[in-house]
Length: 169
Image 1 (tube, helix red, strand yellow):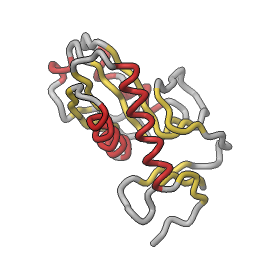
Image 2 (image 1 turned 90 degrees about the horizontal axis):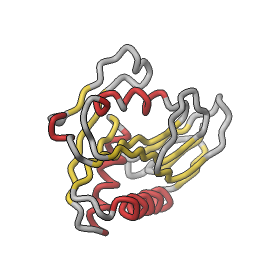
Image 3 (image 1 turned 30 degrees about the vertical axis):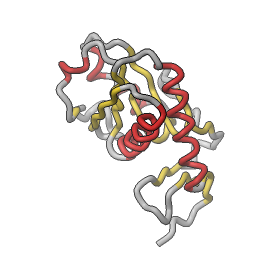
């Protein structure tokens, strides 16, 4: 069944935004030895995986990936976990990736596992920035900035070929 809302970005446009993000990440990190793509489960991880593929096609910087798990609807009450040994994060550049940045709550709480480690650099990447901040969080790399009302929602579909894209409802 097709997603029945206003499509903002189709598949080709979404993939182009992801490719452009990969180039921007490379331009800002061209001297790094290793970059870790940390995707916030689920859609942030899907985006991180696609970004990592595009990134590997344009440069020879070594990449690794991890999933970050938390309850996006109640991050302050949820435990936050990684499927990665946190000790291996020391002196690494980390890209924290999510699909949509709205209030900044998810990204703010997602920083927690990285705060007690001596990492080299932490950057944030989102496909869509809605700009309704409640937390002082910004994304270093944004695929698409979209002005919306607080009542509207943005859905990013990266796992269904026939619906692949960004939708507003």
